[in-house]
View 1 (tube, rainbow, N blue to C red):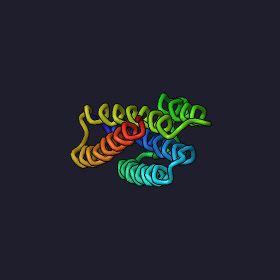
View 2: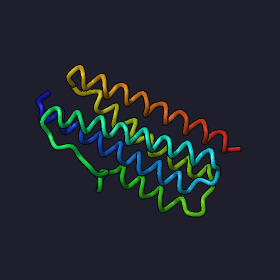
View 3: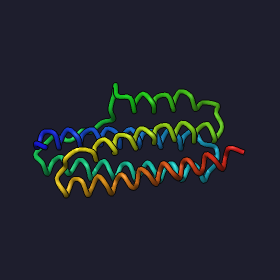
Length: 148
């Protein structure tokens, strides 16, 4: 994998993580349960930390890191859908929309991990992917709790 491919992969994950950060903030804004608001706000902060780590990796490889979410990308549209669909919805609906966004994040990280990445980049992405899986599983569990 050449350096440009590495930078492109990292920038794709920056967009994914920024979209996740924006999505979790939107979910926090629309949730009614205070504990959900806190959960979503904490997840947004985790995504923001992932963005910073990815941006530094891009710089370390001589690239210019993405600084905004993936406008025009599928994940951005998903989070825009979250913003438009959540108005007047209940916490279960908020969690369902959040889970859809986390499904996309999982697939983005899985695609990156299929590439022939340098060991230090692969290690960082694997660590972040574990966080994505944790987010997804927690959102799914919360959704199930709010389902009844």
